Image: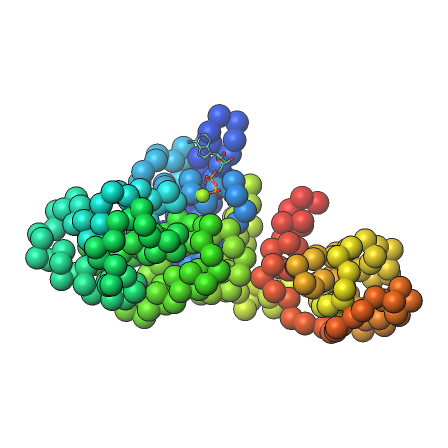
Length: 299
Ligand SMILES: Nc1ncnc2c1ncn2[C@@H]1O[C@H](COP(=O)(O)OP(=O)(O)O)[C@@H](O)[C@H]1O
Ligand SMILES: [Mg+2]
């Protein structure tokens, strides 16, 4: 049987004329990593704040089935650590706010610091931590009360790619300990790491599904082109190309007929004497899926 942890029904919140969250419904199941993915301003933080009961919805409802207040950990988008306190002093402070005794805090802190790889930095001032380590300290504080449910708002924003990977590794470890995770992110590559993804744009939830299903539902083919050119315009006017995206070192051409476009593109690049590493059909990435969904909405 599927156990629900969070049930959000037709939630709305406006700020003046801005519909920050526009009729959003989601179900988060026990044991799942649910990702709220969307660009800046999509409404992720507003939605999460309502789920955490920090702001009041205009309409709709939020139901949490997490077995009481203590089993709910929240890491806000802008987490404030005390820079002039050490890692351990910050933890003591947050533990005391949760009403935990100092012995319990110490025990629990050791467990979590081990998990988050901060165990050797207990005495370091928070100001002297790297961005990735600060985020892990914030996560440590959110885990102090041994929550069954973790709600993380853009925990990896602005963090370097290596630290982002490490942060996600920790999330997987927590998830293996049966902790349900609701996490928001503007990074499409992180969508791939979630069990279920809700794509938000302009306050609305465009789609909710597993990454695998979202890719399966993508109605076109993708031709990946790696060539020494940084001008997407060179593909303009070619037949059967629906869309072109450039990802730093490669192009993704969206098409109904990868085979035909492949031969067009290959002769085009030859004609223009552009050095070409590879042209091949690939499965759509989450980026391809989201670009498609975002553009479909605008149409
Ligand atoms: N307290 C607020 N007052 C006015 N506008 C707000 C407030 N909070 C958010 N907004 C607006 O609501 C929209 C959604 O913001 P937010 O929920 O922060 O999105 P995200 O977290 O996806 O970046 C944005 O247009 C933002 O400017
Ligand atoms: Mg936000």
